[in-house]
Length: 120
Image (cartoon, rainbow, N blue to C red; front, side):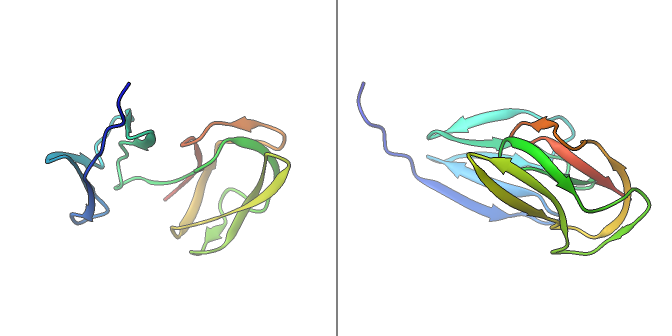
């Protein structure tokens, strides 16, 4: 198998949507359905950016949850700790809003890209 070289460009196209160009072919992310694609061994998920969802970027086990449903969440606020590869990883919010639903529990294993919390 030969090594392949990819030309990749990433840009924001408004309202949280992202455009990725791979060897001249465009992919726009921010649609309703979740679909995983691989580009040069890097994974991306299509995501509806109009929904306020906090997702994990790594797989692991939820070791502690610091927020409650109904609480107002600020940007950069610590929401939970995820144990992965013998390390404790603090997951912080990149959004702000009221916590509508917490989809995980302590000691639950989560996959990369899984939704943890939904905000209103």
